[in-house]
Image (cartoon, one colour):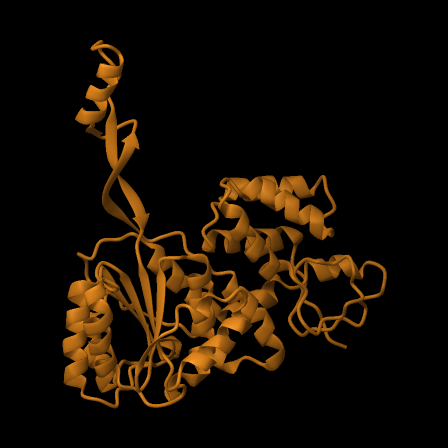
Length: 377
Protein backbone atom coordinates (compact mmCIF):
# COMPACT_ATOMS: atom_id res chain seq x y z
CA UNK A 1 0.00 0.00 0.00
CA UNK A 2 1.53 3.28 -1.14
CA UNK A 3 1.54 6.22 1.25
CA UNK A 4 0.51 9.75 0.34
CA UNK A 5 2.45 12.64 1.84
CA UNK A 6 -0.03 15.35 2.79
CA UNK A 7 0.58 19.08 3.04
CA UNK A 8 -1.76 21.86 4.18
CA UNK A 9 -4.15 23.27 1.61
CA UNK A 10 -2.60 26.70 2.21
CA UNK A 11 0.78 25.39 1.06
CA UNK A 12 -0.74 24.06 -2.16
CA UNK A 13 -2.30 27.43 -2.95
CA UNK A 14 0.85 29.36 -2.01
CA UNK A 15 2.73 27.12 -4.44
CA UNK A 16 0.16 28.01 -7.09
CA UNK A 17 0.80 31.70 -6.41
CA UNK A 18 4.53 31.13 -6.84
CA UNK A 19 3.89 29.38 -10.16
CA UNK A 20 1.84 32.38 -11.30
CA UNK A 21 4.63 34.79 -10.37
CA UNK A 22 7.18 32.69 -12.26
CA UNK A 23 4.93 32.93 -15.31
CA UNK A 24 4.72 36.71 -15.06
CA UNK A 25 1.39 37.22 -13.25
CA UNK A 26 1.64 39.71 -10.37
CA UNK A 27 0.24 37.30 -7.79
CA UNK A 28 1.87 39.04 -4.85
CA UNK A 29 1.50 37.68 -1.29
CA UNK A 30 -1.40 40.03 -0.49
CA UNK A 31 -3.30 38.70 -3.54
CA UNK A 32 -2.58 35.11 -2.48
CA UNK A 33 -3.91 35.91 0.99
CA UNK A 34 -7.11 37.22 -0.62
CA UNK A 35 -7.23 34.03 -2.69
CA UNK A 36 -7.02 31.88 0.45
CA UNK A 37 -9.62 34.01 2.24
CA UNK A 38 -11.99 33.57 -0.70
CA UNK A 39 -11.55 29.80 -0.53
CA UNK A 40 -12.70 29.80 3.08
CA UNK A 41 -16.09 30.94 1.78
CA UNK A 42 -16.12 28.58 -1.20
CA UNK A 43 -15.60 24.86 -1.84
CA UNK A 44 -11.83 24.36 -1.97
CA UNK A 45 -12.40 20.93 -3.54
CA UNK A 46 -14.31 22.39 -6.48
CA UNK A 47 -12.21 23.09 -9.56
CA UNK A 48 -14.59 25.85 -10.66
CA UNK A 49 -14.52 27.61 -7.28
CA UNK A 50 -10.72 27.43 -7.06
CA UNK A 51 -10.37 28.72 -10.64
CA UNK A 52 -12.59 31.77 -10.18
CA UNK A 53 -11.29 32.60 -6.71
CA UNK A 54 -7.72 32.65 -8.07
CA UNK A 55 -8.60 34.49 -11.25
CA UNK A 56 -10.51 37.27 -9.48
CA UNK A 57 -7.87 37.82 -6.80
CA UNK A 58 -4.59 37.17 -8.67
CA UNK A 59 -5.17 38.66 -12.15
CA UNK A 60 -4.86 42.44 -12.37
CA UNK A 61 -4.64 42.82 -16.18
CA UNK A 62 -6.61 41.41 -19.10
CA UNK A 63 -3.42 39.90 -20.55
CA UNK A 64 -2.89 37.93 -17.32
CA UNK A 65 -5.92 35.75 -17.98
CA UNK A 66 -4.38 33.63 -20.77
CA UNK A 67 -1.24 33.07 -18.67
CA UNK A 68 -3.37 32.28 -15.61
CA UNK A 69 -5.34 29.67 -17.58
CA UNK A 70 -2.15 27.91 -18.73
CA UNK A 71 -0.64 27.84 -15.24
CA UNK A 72 -3.91 26.69 -13.68
CA UNK A 73 -4.23 23.85 -16.19
CA UNK A 74 -0.64 22.76 -15.62
CA UNK A 75 -0.83 23.03 -11.82
CA UNK A 76 -4.25 21.55 -11.10
CA UNK A 77 -4.86 19.16 -13.96
CA UNK A 78 -5.13 15.46 -12.96
CA UNK A 79 -2.09 13.48 -14.02
CA UNK A 80 -2.22 10.84 -16.71
CA UNK A 81 -2.65 7.43 -15.18
CA UNK A 82 -4.10 8.70 -11.89
CA UNK A 83 -7.31 7.08 -10.66
CA UNK A 84 -10.29 8.88 -12.17
CA UNK A 85 -12.63 7.89 -9.33
CA UNK A 86 -11.86 11.22 -7.64
CA UNK A 87 -14.36 12.98 -9.86
CA UNK A 88 -14.54 16.18 -7.81
CA UNK A 89 -10.84 16.44 -7.03
CA UNK A 90 -9.18 18.78 -9.53
CA UNK A 91 -6.39 20.14 -7.33
CA UNK A 92 -2.82 18.87 -7.35
CA UNK A 93 -2.23 15.16 -7.00
CA UNK A 94 0.85 12.99 -6.97
CA UNK A 95 2.44 11.91 -10.19
CA UNK A 96 1.98 8.23 -10.68
CA UNK A 97 0.94 7.67 -7.04
CA UNK A 98 -2.19 5.60 -6.75
CA UNK A 99 -4.20 5.89 -3.56
CA UNK A 100 -6.03 2.66 -2.77
CA UNK A 101 -8.38 4.60 -0.51
CA UNK A 102 -9.49 6.99 -3.26
CA UNK A 103 -13.08 5.84 -3.00
CA UNK A 104 -13.22 5.92 0.78
CA UNK A 105 -14.86 8.68 2.78
CA UNK A 106 -12.54 11.63 3.38
CA UNK A 107 -10.04 10.56 0.72
CA UNK A 108 -10.83 13.56 -1.48
CA UNK A 109 -9.44 16.05 1.01
CA UNK A 110 -6.22 14.04 1.35
CA UNK A 111 -5.92 13.90 -2.44
CA UNK A 112 -6.39 17.65 -2.72
CA UNK A 113 -3.49 18.41 -0.38
CA UNK A 114 -1.21 15.52 -1.24
CA UNK A 115 0.89 16.56 -4.18
CA UNK A 116 2.52 19.96 -3.92
CA UNK A 117 5.71 18.26 -2.78
CA UNK A 118 5.55 15.72 -5.63
CA UNK A 119 5.19 18.55 -8.13
CA UNK A 120 8.21 20.31 -6.63
CA UNK A 121 10.25 17.11 -6.98
CA UNK A 122 9.36 16.99 -10.67
CA UNK A 123 10.30 20.64 -11.15
CA UNK A 124 13.84 19.92 -9.95
CA UNK A 125 14.30 16.51 -11.58
CA UNK A 126 16.73 16.10 -14.48
CA UNK A 127 14.57 15.73 -17.60
CA UNK A 128 16.97 13.10 -18.95
CA UNK A 129 16.05 10.86 -15.99
CA UNK A 130 12.28 11.17 -16.13
CA UNK A 131 10.16 8.04 -16.00
CA UNK A 132 7.54 7.58 -18.68
CA UNK A 133 4.60 8.40 -16.41
CA UNK A 134 6.29 11.65 -15.30
CA UNK A 135 6.78 13.14 -18.75
CA UNK A 136 3.22 14.34 -19.29
CA UNK A 137 3.32 16.37 -16.06
CA UNK A 138 6.69 17.89 -16.94
CA UNK A 139 5.45 18.75 -20.45
CA UNK A 140 2.55 20.69 -18.94
CA UNK A 141 4.86 22.55 -16.57
CA UNK A 142 7.12 23.58 -19.46
CA UNK A 143 4.09 24.65 -21.52
CA UNK A 144 3.05 26.99 -18.69
CA UNK A 145 6.32 28.97 -18.88
CA UNK A 146 5.83 32.43 -20.38
CA UNK A 147 7.73 35.70 -20.73
CA UNK A 148 6.75 39.24 -19.81
CA UNK A 149 9.78 40.90 -21.40
CA UNK A 150 12.43 41.79 -22.30
CA UNK A 151 11.67 45.24 -23.67
CA UNK A 152 13.55 48.01 -25.42
CA UNK A 153 12.99 51.73 -25.87
CA UNK A 154 11.90 52.47 -29.43
CA UNK A 155 12.83 55.54 -31.47
CA UNK A 156 9.14 56.13 -32.08
CA UNK A 157 7.21 58.38 -29.75
CA UNK A 158 3.60 58.48 -28.56
CA UNK A 159 1.47 61.08 -26.75
CA UNK A 160 2.07 61.09 -22.99
CA UNK A 161 1.21 63.13 -19.93
CA UNK A 162 4.90 63.79 -19.29
CA UNK A 163 8.03 63.75 -21.37
CA UNK A 164 9.52 65.87 -24.13
CA UNK A 165 7.45 68.90 -25.16
CA UNK A 166 5.50 68.24 -28.36
CA UNK A 167 5.89 71.62 -30.04
CA UNK A 168 3.99 70.65 -33.16
CA UNK A 169 1.08 69.15 -31.22
CA UNK A 170 0.94 72.10 -28.83
CA UNK A 171 0.96 74.63 -31.70
CA UNK A 172 -1.78 72.73 -33.53
CA UNK A 173 -3.91 72.75 -30.37
CA UNK A 174 -3.44 76.51 -29.99
CA UNK A 175 -4.44 77.10 -33.63
CA UNK A 176 -7.59 75.04 -33.12
CA UNK A 177 -8.36 77.24 -30.11
CA UNK A 178 -8.03 80.40 -32.21
CA UNK A 179 -4.59 81.28 -30.90
CA UNK A 180 -5.60 81.04 -27.26
CA UNK A 181 -3.24 79.26 -24.83
CA UNK A 182 -3.77 75.52 -24.80
CA UNK A 183 -2.62 72.68 -22.60
CA UNK A 184 0.96 71.69 -23.35
CA UNK A 185 1.31 68.42 -25.24
CA UNK A 186 4.08 65.92 -24.55
CA UNK A 187 5.47 62.84 -26.24
CA UNK A 188 7.51 59.96 -24.89
CA UNK A 189 9.48 57.21 -26.62
CA UNK A 190 7.53 53.95 -26.68
CA UNK A 191 8.63 50.65 -25.17
CA UNK A 192 8.42 47.61 -27.45
CA UNK A 193 9.27 43.90 -26.99
CA UNK A 194 12.89 43.01 -27.62
CA UNK A 195 13.49 40.11 -29.98
CA UNK A 196 14.53 36.79 -28.46
CA UNK A 197 16.52 34.37 -30.64
CA UNK A 198 16.80 30.75 -29.50
CA UNK A 199 19.59 28.67 -31.05
CA UNK A 200 19.05 25.02 -30.14
CA UNK A 201 21.67 22.30 -30.51
CA UNK A 202 19.96 19.16 -31.89
CA UNK A 203 23.08 17.02 -32.20
CA UNK A 204 23.34 13.50 -30.81
CA UNK A 205 24.99 14.62 -27.57
CA UNK A 206 21.96 16.84 -26.77
CA UNK A 207 19.32 14.23 -27.63
CA UNK A 208 18.26 13.64 -24.01
CA UNK A 209 17.46 17.35 -23.52
CA UNK A 210 16.35 18.43 -26.99
CA UNK A 211 12.68 17.63 -26.36
CA UNK A 212 12.52 19.88 -23.27
CA UNK A 213 14.28 22.75 -25.05
CA UNK A 214 11.97 22.44 -28.06
CA UNK A 215 8.90 22.51 -25.82
CA UNK A 216 10.32 25.56 -24.06
CA UNK A 217 10.87 27.18 -27.46
CA UNK A 218 7.30 26.30 -28.49
CA UNK A 219 5.90 27.94 -25.34
CA UNK A 220 7.79 31.15 -26.19
CA UNK A 221 7.27 31.17 -29.97
CA UNK A 222 3.53 30.54 -29.72
CA UNK A 223 2.80 33.23 -27.14
CA UNK A 224 5.47 35.80 -27.99
CA UNK A 225 5.61 37.07 -31.61
CA UNK A 226 9.11 38.56 -31.27
CA UNK A 227 10.73 35.13 -30.91
CA UNK A 228 12.88 33.34 -33.47
CA UNK A 229 14.01 29.72 -33.16
CA UNK A 230 16.85 28.10 -35.10
CA UNK A 231 18.52 24.71 -34.74
CA UNK A 232 22.19 23.91 -35.16
CA UNK A 233 23.78 20.56 -35.88
CA UNK A 234 25.60 19.89 -39.09
CA UNK A 235 23.62 22.81 -40.56
CA UNK A 236 21.54 25.82 -39.54
CA UNK A 237 17.73 25.56 -39.83
CA UNK A 238 15.04 28.12 -39.01
CA UNK A 239 12.09 26.38 -37.29
CA UNK A 240 10.09 29.34 -35.98
CA UNK A 241 7.08 28.63 -38.18
CA UNK A 242 7.03 24.94 -37.27
CA UNK A 243 7.07 25.73 -33.54
CA UNK A 244 4.09 28.09 -33.74
CA UNK A 245 1.64 25.21 -34.04
CA UNK A 246 -1.23 25.26 -31.49
CA UNK A 247 0.06 22.28 -29.49
CA UNK A 248 3.56 21.16 -28.54
CA UNK A 249 3.06 17.70 -30.06
CA UNK A 250 1.96 19.21 -33.40
CA UNK A 251 4.94 21.58 -33.26
CA UNK A 252 7.39 18.73 -32.65
CA UNK A 253 5.88 16.78 -35.57
CA UNK A 254 6.32 19.80 -37.84
CA UNK A 255 9.82 20.26 -36.49
CA UNK A 256 10.77 16.65 -37.30
CA UNK A 257 9.66 17.21 -40.90
CA UNK A 258 11.71 20.42 -41.12
CA UNK A 259 15.07 19.53 -39.53
CA UNK A 260 17.21 17.12 -41.59
CA UNK A 261 20.18 16.83 -39.21
CA UNK A 262 18.47 15.63 -36.02
CA UNK A 263 20.88 13.75 -33.71
CA UNK A 264 23.87 14.32 -35.97
CA UNK A 265 27.15 16.09 -35.29
CA UNK A 266 27.79 19.67 -34.20
CA UNK A 267 29.54 22.47 -36.06
CA UNK A 268 28.74 25.43 -33.88
CA UNK A 269 31.32 27.80 -35.36
CA UNK A 270 30.20 27.23 -38.95
CA UNK A 271 26.53 27.53 -38.01
CA UNK A 272 27.05 30.75 -36.06
CA UNK A 273 28.95 32.22 -39.01
CA UNK A 274 26.01 31.36 -41.27
CA UNK A 275 23.59 32.83 -38.73
CA UNK A 276 25.48 36.11 -38.53
CA UNK A 277 26.16 36.33 -42.26
CA UNK A 278 22.68 35.39 -43.48
CA UNK A 279 20.29 36.35 -40.72
CA UNK A 280 22.47 38.92 -38.97
CA UNK A 281 22.43 41.17 -42.02
CA UNK A 282 18.63 41.21 -41.80
CA UNK A 283 18.79 42.45 -38.23
CA UNK A 284 17.68 39.19 -36.66
CA UNK A 285 20.30 39.19 -33.89
CA UNK A 286 21.13 42.88 -33.71
CA UNK A 287 19.92 44.14 -30.35
CA UNK A 288 18.32 40.78 -29.54
CA UNK A 289 18.64 38.48 -26.53
CA UNK A 290 20.31 35.39 -28.01
CA UNK A 291 20.03 32.08 -26.16
CA UNK A 292 22.28 29.19 -27.21
CA UNK A 293 21.27 25.81 -25.78
CA UNK A 294 24.19 23.44 -26.27
CA UNK A 295 26.63 21.25 -24.37
CA UNK A 296 29.53 22.86 -26.25
CA UNK A 297 30.81 19.75 -28.06
CA UNK A 298 32.36 21.20 -31.20
CA UNK A 299 33.46 19.02 -34.11
CA UNK A 300 34.75 21.98 -36.07
CA UNK A 301 37.46 24.55 -35.44
CA UNK A 302 37.21 26.09 -31.97
CA UNK A 303 39.02 29.19 -33.22
CA UNK A 304 36.13 29.76 -35.61
CA UNK A 305 33.68 29.33 -32.73
CA UNK A 306 35.56 31.88 -30.61
CA UNK A 307 35.59 34.43 -33.44
CA UNK A 308 31.90 34.02 -34.22
CA UNK A 309 30.93 34.24 -30.54
CA UNK A 310 32.87 37.51 -30.26
CA UNK A 311 31.06 38.78 -33.33
CA UNK A 312 27.70 37.69 -31.92
CA UNK A 313 28.43 39.39 -28.62
CA UNK A 314 29.07 42.69 -30.41
CA UNK A 315 25.76 42.52 -32.31
CA UNK A 316 23.39 41.11 -29.68
CA UNK A 317 22.00 42.91 -26.66
CA UNK A 318 22.77 39.89 -24.50
CA UNK A 319 24.12 36.36 -25.02
CA UNK A 320 22.94 33.53 -22.79
CA UNK A 321 24.44 30.04 -22.98
CA UNK A 322 22.44 27.14 -21.53
CA UNK A 323 24.26 23.87 -20.90
CA UNK A 324 22.20 21.08 -19.27
CA UNK A 325 25.35 19.47 -17.87
CA UNK A 326 26.06 22.58 -15.78
CA UNK A 327 23.36 21.45 -13.37
CA UNK A 328 25.22 18.25 -12.52
CA UNK A 329 27.45 17.98 -9.50
CA UNK A 330 31.13 18.45 -10.23
CA UNK A 331 30.60 19.92 -13.70
CA UNK A 332 33.33 22.14 -15.13
CA UNK A 333 33.33 23.72 -18.62
CA UNK A 334 36.32 21.70 -19.74
CA UNK A 335 35.40 21.09 -23.40
CA UNK A 336 37.28 23.16 -25.95
CA UNK A 337 34.01 24.47 -27.35
CA UNK A 338 32.80 25.82 -24.01
CA UNK A 339 36.18 27.38 -23.22
CA UNK A 340 36.11 29.13 -26.59
CA UNK A 341 32.56 30.41 -26.13
CA UNK A 342 32.42 31.47 -22.47
CA UNK A 343 34.42 34.74 -22.77
CA UNK A 344 31.62 36.06 -25.01
CA UNK A 345 28.74 34.88 -22.81
CA UNK A 346 26.83 37.19 -20.45
CA UNK A 347 24.94 34.47 -18.55
CA UNK A 348 25.91 30.80 -18.27
CA UNK A 349 22.98 28.71 -17.01
CA UNK A 350 21.87 25.13 -16.58
CA UNK A 351 18.80 23.85 -18.39
CA UNK A 352 18.35 20.29 -17.18
CA UNK A 353 15.04 20.69 -15.30
CA UNK A 354 11.78 22.63 -15.28
CA UNK A 355 13.12 24.79 -12.46
CA UNK A 356 16.21 25.79 -14.45
CA UNK A 357 14.08 26.46 -17.56
CA UNK A 358 11.93 28.78 -15.45
CA UNK A 359 15.12 30.47 -14.26
CA UNK A 360 16.17 30.84 -17.91
CA UNK A 361 12.82 32.53 -18.68
CA UNK A 362 13.37 34.99 -15.83
CA UNK A 363 16.89 35.85 -17.04
CA UNK A 364 15.62 36.36 -20.61
CA UNK A 365 12.81 38.62 -19.40
CA UNK A 366 15.06 40.82 -17.25
CA UNK A 367 15.72 44.20 -18.83
CA UNK A 368 19.27 44.55 -17.55
CA UNK A 369 22.22 46.38 -19.01
CA UNK A 370 25.03 44.66 -20.88
CA UNK A 371 27.62 46.58 -18.89
CA UNK A 372 28.29 44.15 -16.07
CA UNK A 373 30.39 41.11 -15.39
CA UNK A 374 29.16 37.85 -16.95
CA UNK A 375 27.03 35.73 -14.61
CA UNK A 376 28.28 32.12 -14.55
CA UNK A 377 26.53 31.21 -11.33
